[in-house]
Image (cartoon, rainbow, N blue to C red; front, side, top):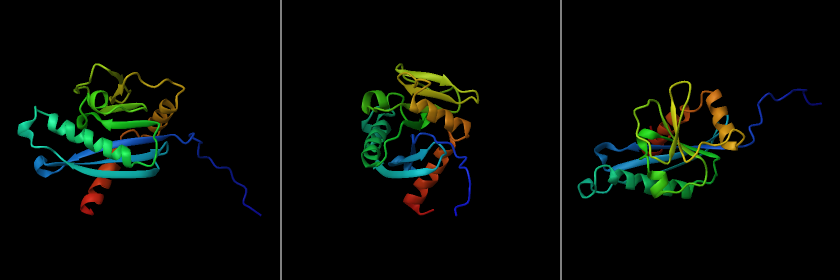
Length: 180
C-alpha cells in the first residue's frame, strides 16, 4: 500500500529559462560563455558552454571585436543547446544592446538585465523596471501577462531566482574550463 501524500510543488507548465553568461579571459584574447537552462524552480536541465577568440582589437572599431566574438559564441551555444527555452536572459553589461537586433535574431522573448539604471539600451528594446531596482530591457515588447514567458519570469522573480542562476553559470564556466 502506498503512503498517502499530496505533492505541493506547483505545476509550472514546463516552461524553461535560458541564462546566457560571458566571461572575458585574462588578457582579453578570448571569451568563455555558457547557456544554462533551468525550469521555473531554478532546477538545472542543460548547460552548454564554449569559448571563442576575440579578433585583434586594433583592426576593429572600439567594442566591435568583442561584439563580433559574443555573436559567434551565442550562435554556437544556441546551435548546441538541446532545449528550447520560453525565455532567454542575459546580463546587460556583457551583451551589446544591438547584438540581438542586428547580429542574432531570436524567436523567443529575450531580455538583458541590469542591476542599475546606468546602462545603454537600443531603441528597439523596451525597458521595464522591477520593484527591487533591477531593470529589464526586452528585445521588442515585453511578453504579455498571460504568456508562458511572463508567467515564467514572474515565477523566477517570486522565488528570488531572476539573478541567482547567473552566478551558477559563472561557476559552471570556471569548472568546465579550469576544473575549479
